[in-house]
Length: 130
Image (cartoon, rainbow, N blue to C red; front, side, top):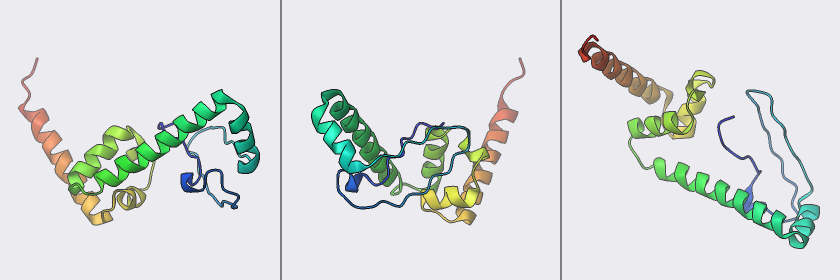
C-alpha cells in the first residue's frame, strides 16, 4: 500500500454516469465498488458518511494538485518527489510507467537516476570510516 485512495473520477462523484475504471494491485487489497446514486442517498442521510466522503474527495483533490504542481518542476525534482511520496515503489513498477507519470521521457528518467546514483556513490566514498 502506498497511501493513495482510488475513487474513480472525482469529477463525476454523485452523477449518474457509468464509470469504466481499471485497477491493478501489487499486493493483496480490498476493492470496493458501489452504485453512486445509492451511495449519495446514504451520504445525504448519514452525517458521518458525508464527512468521510468529503475527506476522501479532499484527499483525491490534494493528491491531484500535488501531482500537477510537481509537473512544473525540473525532472530531478520530480523524481526525488516520487521517491519520497512512494518509497520503494521504484523497485516494483516499470520505469517507463514512472517516467510517464512524472511527465518525462524514459531516457530522461534513466539519466536522472544515473546522476543520483553517481552522487550517492561519491557521497559514500567521502564519508569517514568509523
